[in-house]
Image 1 (cartoon, one colour):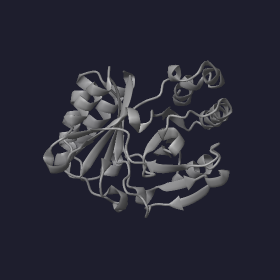
Image 2: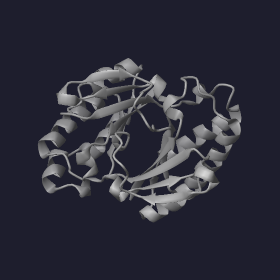
Image 3: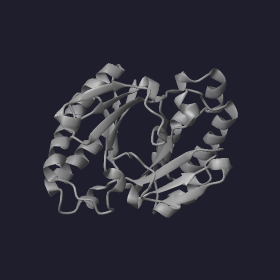
Image 4: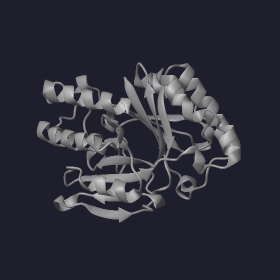
Length: 138
Length: 137
């Protein structure tokens, strides 16, 4: 099963575009990342620039409306994520608990949908979807 | 430049209501466009927060809470990883996503060169090595 561990650093929703990282915290996080990798559970990971450098597109009524960041109404935003492959949610939770996170951080664990989760009809409609990203990378 | 496009949860996605076959097919066509444009690295949907968990690190301890979580409008339901030359390019493409309603958020992904002096060169190298090894597995 694949799970996404979503890092939600509270306060990041209003961080300036040129946010500074603490090298010691980065080094601790790298040791954690390497432990995930050495255990064979890490698929990929990324960090995200603050929302002040981003945008939101809303589709109310099917019409796209673009808003530049930061987003005044946001209570929490993503700071980054890990994609991991483990046998259960419990295993994912156990990994997340070992993260050297700071006091204002939350990790949310979410299972990734697989094609087998959908009906035959939907699987037919989405045929080739799983190969798309790979095709895009090639 | 790489961007993460976060699809925000709706009451339907949180209730585990899946898109219709037609909506799925429309999204498949949209994804094919992204692939043809050489922009798509990955795209995934997430199960509702009812099947998830949160770990809160307040006061230095890890506190586990089981889903579902309060519907705040900030929950995620899925994402794309996109390669593009600029934020504007991503916005331009994503406005054509076949969503009848809802919201997506576009965020730039950190690259090693973004860290400047904050992160020592040897640490940047380790990040790159780790990323390369993870991508191969």
